[in-house]
Image (cartoon, helix red, strand yellow):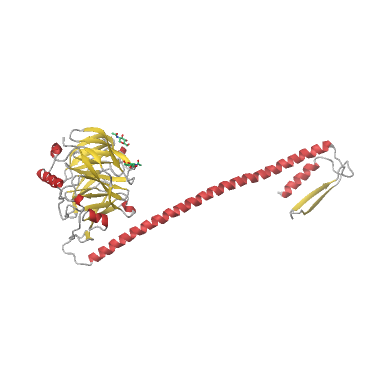
Length: 450
Ligand SMILES: *[C@@H]1O[C@H](CO)[C@@H](O)[C@H](O)[C@H]1NC(C)=O
Ligand SMILES: *[C@@H]1O[C@H](CO)[C@@H](O)[C@H](O)[C@H]1NC(C)=O
């Protein structure tokens, strides 16, 4: 480049003037760079005049101007390069930042994986230990982890000895298969007026417990488990099959499950319910409803829910494949879902709890995708507006007795901002929910019997 520039400058300065003699020399300049020089005699001057003519100076000036322009163009190119370099440096800094963040996230996930692996190993060791002991006529699928005979103190608010519960139990006994027609005859039924603050009973300690479903038997528990038994399924993962059982609320809060049952078919999402000694749930990636009997530890009934959307077709607003949601109330067992025919509007069907046959169906006018969750109380469907907002409302109800719907506004709190399950428990007269790792319950108040 240097060479070219000097050549060009020289020829520019010489211009088209006639030349008698010319010489060419080559040497290092002060900066030790090779410099080529042409020497040309002036045709008119024997020596350099003290003052050049103004025309000559003008000509030199304009040529120098051209040289300056050329140099500044070259220098300008360098400036552009510098700008580009600054841009690159900024992008590089950003990429490094992103990489650091990803590395942190990776470390955090790695820790969670390690925790999960530890839990799995603990469970495997425990199973190994138990397998090595003789097990008198126990089903092979059940893995008792806790001495079930030990009775622990129970929170008095969860006691079944309360008069209200005794009354309810008497009523249930009197109407073994309650139907919609006698809703109002069940004492304590009425419209939802108030939902209390969430009370946390347990926080899941691994990522598998971000979403889940927890429940107590909603009617008189039959089979080998007492009425205080609490059940839990962590539903993050693709092959969800563990059903954990805790003797009571106290044990749920304190620690290890007393029972781990391995379900024969994987569970889809958080719609399961416990009713009269059976777990009702949706089989993964299907519209198949399953009744798993706790007593025999086997599937007692299975049936497809006609036309029901599944695996992401009609979920609640938070997604999570919550297409099919079981519910239990004073009237029995229900399922909340949608169909193509209903175009995404909530359909609620009452099920025969024994055979899972649909006994009756209602199509509502609220789109399932717009609600965070839904539950049944006294034959009425209720929907919650938001799963993530800490202060939201139960803002819609549909009465299966009259097929009438209406807007309501009962305040409801998602304290942990990601509520993946809300179910009513008619035995406790409470709502159970799973809010971002937290297993919580809410007291409720119902209006007077109409
Ligand atoms: C309830 O809230 C949801 C979400 O904000 C909204 O889409 C819906 O229209 C509301 N329903 C009624 C009946 O107000
Ligand atoms: C939600 O409501 C509670 C009680 O009504 C209030 O204390 C709290 O500040 C509210 N939170 C937000 C985020 O509005």
